[in-house]
Amino acid sequence: MENYTKALVDFAAEIEYRDLSHSVIEQTKMFIADYYAASLAGYRVNGKFNSVVMAVLKEEGGTEQASILFEEKKYPISNAAFMNAVYAHGADMDDGNRKSGGHIGTHIMSSVFALSEKLDVTWKDVIVAINIGYDFFNRVAGAAQPGLYSKGFHSTGIAGAIASGAACAKLMGLDRNGIYNSVSLAAFQSSGLIIIDESGQGCKPVNPANAARTGVISAMMAEKGLVTPRNPLESKKGWFHAFTDQVNETVLLDGLGIDFTICESYLKLYPTCRHTHSCIDAAIEIRKQIYESNYLLYDIEKVYVFVYPSAIKSAGTISNPQSQEEAKFSIHYAVATAFSKGNFSLEDLDTENQDHTIIDNLSKKIELIIDDSMENREKGIRGARVKVIFCNGRIFEKTILIPKGEGINSLNWDDIQMKMQACSQGIVEAEQARLFVEKCRCINDDDRFTPILSFLTKIK
Image (cartoon, rainbow, N blue to C red; front, side):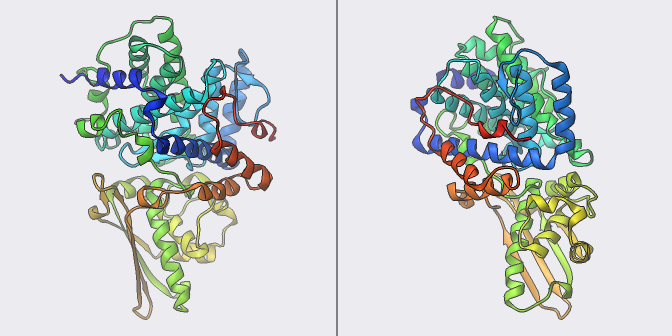
C-alpha cells in the first residue's frame, strides 16, 4: 500500500517560502485579488442564501476573533472561514483547476485568512500556507478524478476539507505529526454532493464553506495533540477508497515540491459553471464574424454545440433557466446570451430582465452534441466547438480548446482590474476597486498579516 498521506505531509512540513519561485508568489497575489473580486460578485448575486447563513451565524454569536466580509463585527474563526467561503463561491466566479475539477481559493483563502488574524504571521507564512492548500487540493482531487465526480461528489467540498486542514496546520507551524493529524481529521469529515448543479444551485457555496470550517477546526484540534486515524487517504477504509475507484499517482505525486499547482489553476471571467466557458468564448467569436458579414441573429436556423460529456452532465440539462441559480448551469442560456450580447456578465444572471425575444429564440435552436475530442486532461483541453447554420446555408464555426483564464489564455493584472471593476459595480467606487487590486499586487511579503478588506467591512 502506497503511503500517500506521508508523502504529502512530508511535502507540507518541508516547504518554505524560499522554495517558491517569483512566478508562484506573483500568481498567488493575483489569485488573492481574484478571491476578493469573486467574493464581491457572490455578495451581489446570491443574496438570499447569504442573508440566511449570516442570520444563523449572528444568532449563534461567539468570540470575536476574525473578520467576515461586509461585516464590522468579528466572529469565531471557524464561522468567519465558513461565511467568507460562502461569499467567494456565491457567483461561481472563483478560481479552479481543470485536473481537480473544483474550486480552491474559496476554501483555502477563507480558512487561512481567518486563522491568520489570530496568529502572529507574515504574508510569507500566508503565501506558503495557501500554496500548500492548492497543492493538496489539486493533487488529491485530481488523482481521484473522474471517479469522484462520477460517483456524485463535489471535489470542492470533498477534497477541500483536506486541503484546508493541511494549509491551516502549516500556517500554525505544526510539525509533521501535527499536519498529519490535521489532514486525517479533515479527511474523515469530508463532505459535499454535486447534486447542487441540478437544483438548489444557490446552496452550492455550503460545500467550500464546510471545507473551510473543517480545515480550521481540524488544525486547531491537531495543535492540541489529538491522535487521529493512520493512512486516512490510502487505507481500504480511507478517503480514496470511499470516493473513487482509481488513483492517478502521476497527478498525485509527480513534481511534488517542485511544480506548484496554483500555476496550472485558472481564473474565471464569467459567472457560470466552468463547463460553459469555452462555449461562451466560441459564441462571442462567432458573433463578431456574423456582424462583420452583415448577418442577423434572427436568420440563424440551427446552433450545434459540440462539447465533452461531463459538461453536458453538469450544465446541459437546463435549457430555459427560471432563476439566477439555474442560469449559471445552462449551456443553452450561456450560448444564447453570448450571441445576443457579445459577453456574459453578472447582470445576465438576472433572467427576468433579459431580452427574451432574442435569447429564447436562440435557445430553442441550440442542440448539444457529445464530442469526446473536446476534452483531454493530459493536454489541458476542455473545450467546445460551436457551429452556426443560417437559413441560406451559410455556416460559421469556432473551436475553443482552452477557455480564457487558463493555460496559454491566462489572465493578467489588467484582466483582474477589469474583473474587479465588473464584480464591484454598484457597491464599490471604481477608484477604490482599482486601488484594492494594486494593494494585493504590492503585498510586502515581510509585513505582518492584516486583512485586506477595510472597504469590504463597510458595505451594507
